[in-house]
Structure formats: C-alpha cells, structure tokens
Length: 423
Image 1 (cartoon, rainbow, N blue to C red):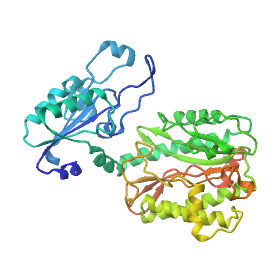
Image 2 (image 1 turned 90 degrees about the horizontal axis):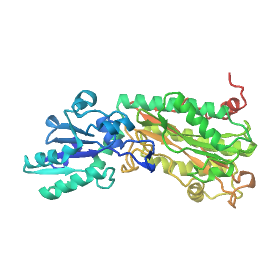
Image 3 (image 1 turned 60 degrees about the vertical axis):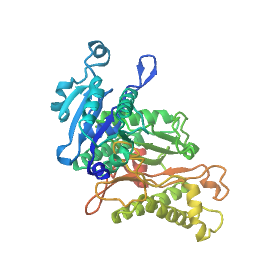
Image 4 (image 1 turned 30 degrees about the vertical axis):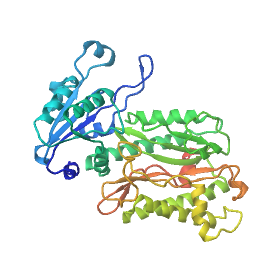
C-alpha cells in the first residue's frame, strides 16, 4: 500500500480488485476455475463473483471489505456452498463482509465522504463485467479520477515472496520433481506423448497438487523444436529425445520445470554432446544468480556462454567468429532464459526484466537448444534435436536455493531412472 499512497499523498484511496468468474466451455459445462491471482493474493478467497475493496489514506487506517455472492440456495444446489458475507472477517481476515450487489452503494458512500479521492481499478484486464460496470459508473457519476495502474504496484509487491510463500513454492517444486522422476521411469518407445502427460498429471495430483500449473509441453523428437508444443499426442520412437516442460499448482503457487531425456534410456553421442553443453551453461547461470543480476543480464550471459559451449562441442560445421556467437545462440535459443515465478507461471508480466533480483525473488533458469531439421549451420547428427533444462531458483539473503534440485538432470541419473536401475 505504501507504493500506492506515495503516488498521491493527500488523497483518499479506494482500491477495487475483482475475482474471476466461472467460464464455460459449452452450455452449463464449466472450465476448471482459476482465480484472478491479484484478488487471491490480497484476499485468500477462491470463490467466484466477488470483489475486494481497500480504502484509506495511510497505512494505519486502511480497511478491507470483501464483497461475496448473495446466498442462493438454487445455485448452491448445483455449484456447492459459498461463504456468507457475515463470515468473511473470520474466514478471510478482512474488516468487513458484504454482498456484491452492495458494491455500488458502498463505493458511492466512500467517495462522497472524502474531498480528494482516487479510484484504483485495473481496466487493462477486465476479469468481471459486473464489477467493471459498477466501477466505471461510480467513477463517471462522481467525476472521480480512475487510475488503472494498480497492477504496476501489486505486481512489484508480488515479486517478494514471504517465508510462507517460499514454503509453498518449495513444496510445489518438490511435488513436480517427484512427478518428473515417476514420469521418466514410465517412459518407453512405442508409447505416446499423451501417456506421459497423463502420468505427470496423475503423479502431481496424487502428491498433493490441485492441478498442473499450465498445459505442459511433452514433445518427442523434432516436436521439441516447436517451443509451445502442447498437442502431446504423437507416438514416441526409439531414439527420440523427449522434452517435458511442466509444473504443478500447490495452494495457489506454481512450479515450472523442464527436463529432456531419451525414450530408450540412453543418450546417443550427439544427444549427449548437445545436452552436456546446455547443462553446463545452465549450471553457470545458476551460479551467477548469487550476484543478484537482472534477468536481462542472465540472458546476455546465456547467449555468449551457449554460443561458446556449442562451438567448443563442435556442433557447428565451420569455425565461428567470436562476434557471431551471440547471433547463433539467439537463433538456437530464441526465448528468454528467465522469468519471474510465483502464483502465475510468468509472475508477473508487467515487471520489467532489467531490474536486479533481490532476496525473495523466485526466477527460472532455462537455457535451451533447438536444432530444426533444415538448419544448415550444424552437423547433421544434431538435426531435429531439441533440449531445454529449467530449474526454479529462490534468491535468499545470503545465497540462492534451487527449489527444483530434487529433479534429476545429470545424464547418469536420468539413464538410471529410465533403465530402472535406480535403487
């Protein structure tokens, strides 16, 4: 709230954050519900059709009011019970609870009580039309300035994970790591990408996750060169490398891990060469995190290190001029090497990547190498290979912690797991 107050120190601030609504894939058939993470972050409420309102002009006198759905027995018959407004303070820790139809009158009253007011509401991401209509009508009727930059402040706050959030992230990564191991061990040529998807989803849920954090990439062979490949339905051939990018959501917090392994349990010489070069770069970048660089600094380092590693591994047909290393690396790894991680997998998109990391930040480190079959600059044995290795890293006061450290990535460990030689 300090960040919001500093923008207009002599004003009374009214902040409105809506929940998500239930979305439907067809008539009366809902998609799995996922809460607006800004609303969840500030309220802890996982219900639909709600709104949180924060009011005040100083840290000491801010009040919180949670607006919940009106009790509807018919709705509860079909969708289950929802929290009554009178229980909101005891369940969610807010100062007051009301029903959503009372939102308009509440805002009108608050704005009329104070001469200088600013109404905060994110209009760039309209997640609930009912709340959006109320807020805009109230602002227009009272000639109140409507500031839609709330996400700039809330997202910066969400970068700093509290000890409780760190614990949830740690557990999310541990669940995902165990699920990767089980999925690796179940791999065999002749099965399908979809079977591995199903195994990963099953293991995450059986270990306590609510669901996967995002549609996973399960890409065998040349499919790995499609960066957002989520069809996950092709047959896995003997000799294929399988790239899996997946994570789970545990009590609202997401893990994000990528591993690449051979379908038959053994890396070929070419696969091993490309994999070891990628892994070496990833380890160096993780070590760099101790100096708290920006994500963009990590990306620039990745481009140089990856180009150098691939040159030393004799991946390219011709000798590469040092000035070309960055260009070639950007072609072979066209995505950024890092993003922020938390309640959202990309947590949060509004925060720039040129700021130095700080204690409490959780970021990914994910170099990749993608060699399409028509690449004319590399030796033919590398054509069609796609590799990504991704870990989740917590920046601490004195060092770093790799939250996904339990997910194997050394070649010897991966081969043992898949060949069922792991004790």
